[in-house]
Image (tube, rainbow, N blue to C red; front, top):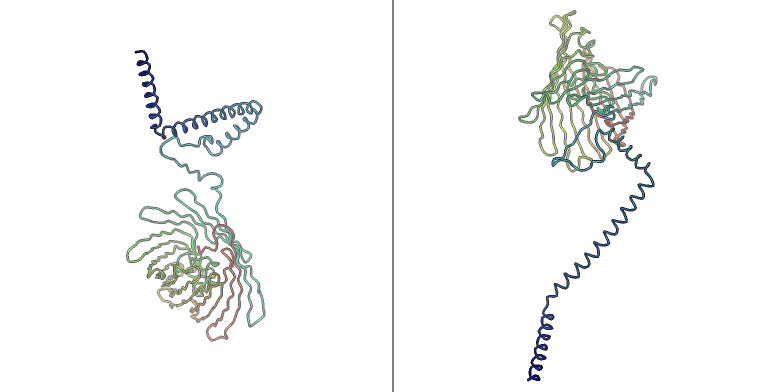
Length: 421
């Protein structure tokens, strides 16, 4: 009996061992993999804790050895916070919406943008004695700045011929009701296209002959107020109305000192992706009650420009022209004088521009006719420098024509390079 019971117990143990072995053989191998990963992560965590403990001990030791260095850093941070008006130690946002603070009125922004332009010429004539062949024609200093969020200013001072002259000095306001712009001060007036430009910006060395004959050697400039407004429609249009005392009073109005009125309408059309056209009309009126003089000047101007977008750096062709009529009437009578020009420039490449202009004008005093033809070649050495060679053929009435050759060098420094105005 005992032998039988012992045999049964041994058989049971053998069956249990076999079942346990089969169960171990059926265990999921992924469990073993997860256990291995957990053991590896625990090892890394222990290493990180040990490294953090070492860093904390080292930092406490450094702080104990160099307390003065911490004081200097705190002083620098306090000085920086005072300079910028904020806490330099706070780098994270304290709100869900980022806030930007403008500090345009700090000392650096109070300084105006300053530009300087030099214009020097060399001349040679085919007749007469050679005199004044080298001319430091003009050096112009320009100041531009925002006065506040509502107004800006431009001031240009010219040095030339031993004289100093404020060529322009005005403040202007943009964003006024009705899309108006208001200018107050002295400025070159927009009669036609080129009169508004500074001399170093025109395509030739001098203004067109009709402008200098009718308005004076420097063209038309005045001191007063100007209103300007753009508007849309079939194309883009601009209207300018100015009330000034023109700097050309002596030539146009007999130095009467009375206000003069100028009105201008300019129209733009984009004919295609590469062609653009503008057409403008200008009128100027002033009186001199001391001599019952009434002066009226009317003008039409046009410009056509071809500039292919893909080749604009290398190719551009512009044709422009103006026609002016001047009438100075005393006691209701007086002659009408005509004058005008047609000019063209063509961009031969990235640096070279060929140009030509024909001028015709009748003298305001005598009616004598002057004609001239001016071909030119301009090389833009860079954005800051250009060189120009020019030939001038001129004939006054029936006199013998005169010939003059000119070389011009223009350079500029500052943020505003050779701007037209």
